[in-house]
Image 1 (tube, rainbow, N blue to C red):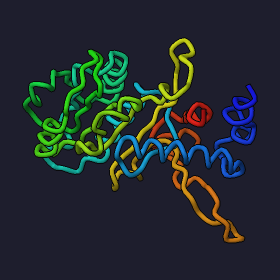
Image 2 (cartoon, rainbow, N blue to C red):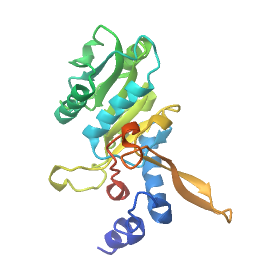
Image 3 (cartoon, rainbow, N blue to C red):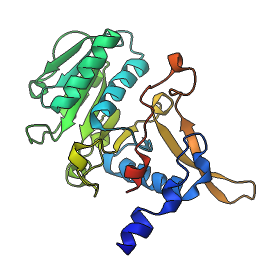
Image 4 (cartoon, rainbow, N blue to C red):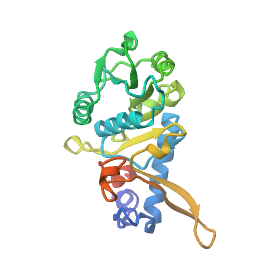
Length: 251
């Protein structure tokens, strides 16, 4: 209990909740930077954000990000392809978002390769809902040849053993951080993570903690990037899911 109260539940980490002035709480930002660094290390991608709401909505955010970021003239207006082995709640949320925004989603068994037609982005699950672990590098290479971007929804704990998405060539990795010591809480939501290749960071939803210097020249933590979210010009928002799961990311 002493460790839990003074480390996991340290008041220094959660007193400054206000999203507009998070820089006040240096302990909280340092803990979130540790979270980002852990995610980058495990998924093999250079930039991670300070958490998102949960895995299924993080995949939906990744799908929208692929649609914003894909500049390939043959692929950018194409469909989004989801592996049939993605989690059912992920497929449901992506379909709902696609219906509202008017783009096509196809669910396909990607162990047999990619479907025909123009593809904007591909979503793979690692390990899949079936529990099987695949080497996705061939499908990812095939997607790249056709100008598509690739998101892998990966279990962080599994990535301690299997080849991370970044090393297989993925552009974006998302998933849940629940496996690292956060109780199930009747199913969530649990802090999601998102990490991206260089060049995609400005299109990333959520918040990004960086290291700077204060006026005395001492290292200081600050938000390097805060998405245009609900509180600023909502119609131009990068994402309307404003929630970061900061406390659960810290835990």
